[in-house]
Amino acid sequence: MKKPVAKLLTSFIVLSLATAAVADELKMKNGDRLSGTVISMQGDTLMFATPYGREAIAINWSEVDCLSMDKQLPITMDGENFNLGTISCPQSGTAQVASAGLADNPIIPLAQLKAINPVNYTGQVSVGGSQHSGNTKASAVAASAFFKAKKKQHQLTLDGRYNYGEDDGSMSVNNYAGSMKYDYFFSKKMYGYLQTLGEHDRFADLDLRLTAGSGLGYQIFDTDRFRLSAEAGPSYMYEDFRNDRDRDSAAGRWAVGMDWDIFPGRLSFFHRHEGYYNFDAKAAILRADQGFQIPLFSNLHANLESNYRFNSKPADDTKKSDLSLILGLSYKFSHW
Image 1 (cartoon, rainbow, N blue to C red):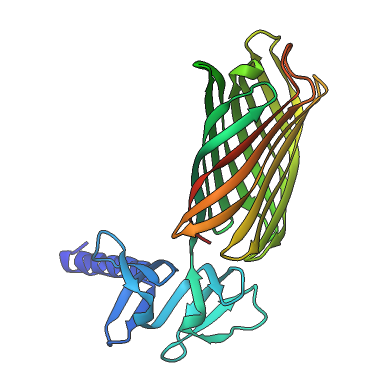
Image 2 (cartoon, one colour):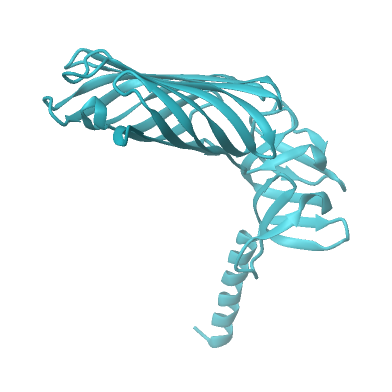
């Protein structure tokens, strides 16, 4: 191949790849134009990657006059859950959304576009004092952390708790638990999940309880003020006791989660309920955390929480149930 032809072919290939990669166009209110790739938009920030920059740049969404993108991304509009679609610019200050989930292709003001390919997340970190009854009777310190993130059809939830206390200088409370769950949404309400949970409770004779399973869930309600979901599926359970006989078995799992803003900005209530039935031991195991939260200032909340644990067939010389009452503070953060 002659050099001029080779150079021309190489230039054509590079130009074709660049044209394919640079599919999104952005026009600013000051007249500037950018070509590149839309990464996401949420809040008042558009993340936009250009072919000549190493990292995506943050652009003030209120300064955008026109946006066109031909690849499908999750798009959220006023009062709507996300739809997978594309965006074109029929005229200055507007956007036309094309999606199979919409009856038509509406033309809306740019201000009505609330999010593009968003990463939604919420979480909190809590510390407080607790009063225990059951297997342990003592004052204790409790700490917990919760995080949930959702992007497109994928959702990840992490949860961890730790309780420690002493009675007359002797340790009387020492338990902790951690869980991780992945959800894949088949539709706006139906999802499948993979889940694992690890628990330790010295004074319940439990070195380790490990569960892992999968199943189906359904988002019954999902509004700004009220959220309710339920899920169930098969699971595997392994229990390592300090003194009692270890056991492992197939199990059934069910769970319910609820968040209710009773008086928005003033009082909210949450409930987390997770249960197992161990088929080998014919034992029911229940974890239930619920409480009220009152905003104090900024992201800081006061919370009154109760944690209940129940095992219908506990280890020898231990009680079936434990109840913890926790009064403390929580730092909450979210973008949902």
